[in-house]
View (tube, rainbow, N blue to C red):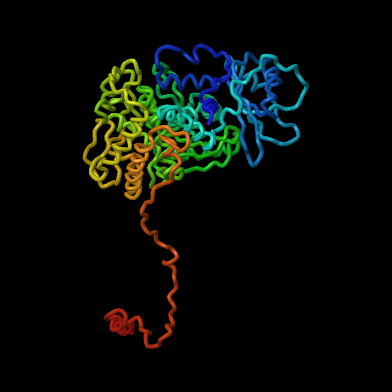
Length: 554
């Protein structure tokens, strides 16, 4: 296979880009996640999404939108919806007011009765033609397309080393800039819809959408706060009259139910709204058709945002953490260890915790314990949820002087991961990221991973004993395969690819109960009359008891 084919991979291409404001992409010191989130929120405020006929419509769209202000960036993406290919362009202006002017100048369909709700989502209709902009250039075309398995496998096969294989997988499948922008636009839509009644409402993406471990096409998790608890107005003598929360959980459920109604009835692009309000964390699930996103919205999961900060920090501490995690997640999906449906399977979060713990356990650790990060925290890092959960740890990378001397390659770390967990005592030991060591299990859960913030909880409590055995079997086989096929080959799959092309190992499954047997009807007329036995004769003393009951009734 020609070596030049290796450079077909999109992760090696550098698309043209527009000059962006300096405050959006600061250089120099590493950023805290909360600063990155604020940057992305500002981008969303300056952006609109326009449905177009094709990417070739952009020069005319650029010319039309330039009347509202300076366009600093534009990205094209396509969505296949109900068998139809739809095209959208995300347009970013230099200032928030310019984007607002574009929204205010937009109209509604005249030929049909519609709910006149303004939003950042619109389409480019017919009208007086304008001279196309000569300098109009898209930063990306089909920017959310996911590489097929065939393409990905080809890139991995021709890679020069196993380290390159892991880097190619990571760069080709990670959530990109456009995918992140789209997620913050979804959050912005919720904020705008509620801003009339709740002017300080804030919808913030968390989880894989922001922690650096998200892949293209991943779901979006949103946390909605109706008021900014850090907003200081203690000096004001004018106090709002407001409703008192007598039962906070019940009030949250009722509030989310009404918000779900608003989203379903009024907000463009939002469909298939499902309210799951009796769960431990009440959520609203919905689909955003213009952004091709599945979204989970909650109001009482602020610890999830702080967990995102923690994982982001671990990903920033060493450049090997994320590529290694992506490879292990991909392998786990290939061998059916993970599942898109909630159940007894290992989740991606648990897998990420297993990777971090492994990197803590090395003779030369690559990442520190959570307790080490807590010890490096400053007063500005203090975070306590409304439920009293302490989520304090150092958030500024410059304050974390963790020195590491481990220079193992990604390929070596991948093999060591499989070897480490093939010998781990899941039956008796718990995985504790806070202390960076295994501890005695407090209960009989098949797999026990201590929740970093609520140490009395097990984040892998859902995992069954059968799936733990499945995991042990797969890591042993993966270690054997990787050790055997580590050398590059031009003919047979090698390295990481050898793991991604194999199916799951044969796992002994427990026999499932056939529910139909519970409803089998026994024929009351046996073939042999001699076998017919009365109910009284089957149960000792039943006949005498029946006679006694008859006498008592008399």
